[in-house]
Length: 426
Image (tube, rainbow, N blue to C red):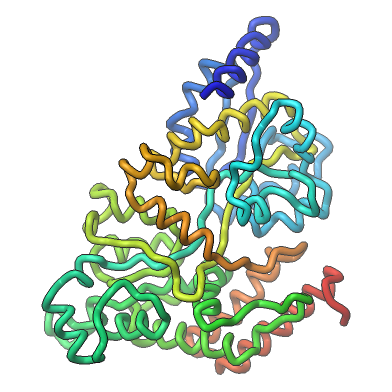
């Protein structure tokens, strides 16, 4: 809180001798953006800086940002950067290094979870971003069904093992099969063991990554040589295809996370491998019929690590005001208040803060989930990789390509992009 007061006082003094400033920020329409917007009037009053937040869907952000970043002076003073774009934006020289500003103002960057600082913080030892929020992926499941004595007895009779929060992929997949059922007796499935978000591109690429990690697979080895045609990758896609055909709602191969969220929130599914940031929505009675009935646990084998960072583009018209805003948004007190609203923290102490745990007891589990995550390939052409490989994954998921063929094509797509980026030799 002391840092915020000092920043606010300094900014108010500046505002008293200069005309009011306005900064523009481009953000995604996600819960953490909404939490910033809720707290924003306090910043504007204390600093004298007006803030215009343009919140748009993810699918439009990259195409809108790039022309602004290329321009000598863009329209945005401050942006948020998805980890997909980190390699591209830093290699192109579009982001301003923040080391000198952080050192000048005594901003403690050691409070951030190292995995996130590596993902959306430093690149090659240079600080380009302060991590804003994490969207690491995990397994959300129906705790009330696991706790039901009748379900426990039936599961034990069928599989010979206890029904519990799954710790292995085999255990989880038995639960997926067990809970897929016809509840109304009309001969059609109406309750599903899992929900697939199989839409081409980003949606399937992110969810399938968790299936890959569950099988011990990786996108590439330590030398960046692709591994998408490995037995582990093929097995992961076999599980994914099985889910589409047998255990997820019809049409879910075209779902993104909004549609998949709604299935789970309406009480029509046992589980959902998804972003941790959606958990607060499942616990909110205004958006969910299963509030108080769900739990969250690490994806067996590890989930996908994901996050966004605050960055100042080199084309920013107002660097100091943008930096003042970042310091406020990432002040430990502001970050804590965002977590109390349901935000996804990036600063390690917040996960075990007593006030946060009292309001949201599952936050220590979110810290465990983040600690066990695996990284997605981050390089100059990650955005292209997501689209090209996501297409092949979707073709395999819907049965339009045999799985080995689709994975071989995904392997070739990834390899070509890594050669183009100079990560591996042709």
